[in-house]
Amino acid sequence: MSESSDCRAGWCAETDYCAVTCAADVLANKWHPVIVHRLLDAGELGFGDLSDELGSVTNKVLSESLDDLEARDIVERTIVSEQPLRVSYALTERGRALEPVVTELERWGREYAEPARPATE
Amino acid sequence: MSESSDCRAGWCAETDYCAVTCAADVLANKWHPVIVHRLLDAGELGFGDLSDELGSVTNKVLSESLDDLEARDIVERTIVSEQPLRVSYALTERGRALEPVVTELERWGREYAEPARPATE
DNA sequence: CAGTATCCACAAGGATACTG
DNA sequence: CAGTATCCTTGTGGATACTG
Image (cartoon, rainbow over all chains, first blue to last red; front, side, top):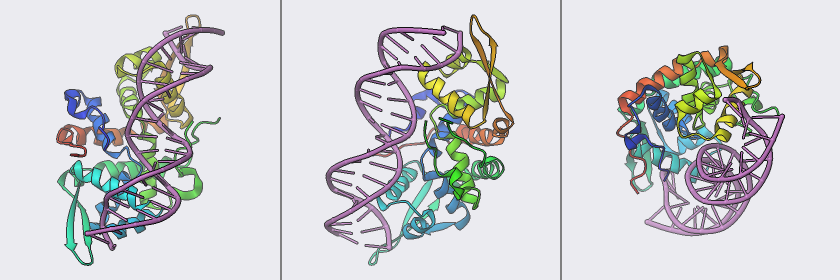
């Protein structure tokens, strides 16, 4: 799924703004930021818990998002029990390192979110 | 252009993670993060300057990105001269307030960018 | 120079139904 | 429960050509 920008093409981390782009790429998905945020303060959550918290997400999309986050080593999947199947998701170290980003994002959101008026037309 | 999420639907800023989502939405565009970053440390840049710095962006896409950022009141457009037309872009207060976000994004990118391995399949 | 106008390709997200 | 499998709609970005 997704080639996810040129981060691995030696294009990243060479310049400061490339680092920014690559990091932003990780959160450039409709559900990733919330998922990380929720895991940040819940520690771990099951698939269903996440689904409930996000509200309008479908199984397919949530599953894809989690797969992607796992592939990026942001999130870790653990099987808690089979029969009935129960899994748990938690942040990896890389994932936890996103905390300051999310914190600042939240701060900005709280202060400046409302006035957004995307395209007058 | 773009309805840009449910931020204005009273959905945002009510909970912490909604604030995060809304803020993330602002940077959820291929070029927005870099543009903001570049303006953050250049102060102001002309259309052509930006185009040069971003490299592979086309006029159309850069133009759209800037329009969107302007509509969101992140960026400010100033006409420097007509004939030949010259404009300058700079961050607004809202835009400058994104600095900590970008800084943390950059920090994370520098430290963790490389190992990303999006989808093994 | 600083854009617009068109057309196009593709990935992302959603709806719905089904399964180990 | 925790996903997969399909199908479908839309948005986003890019190529190219043109303009005040």
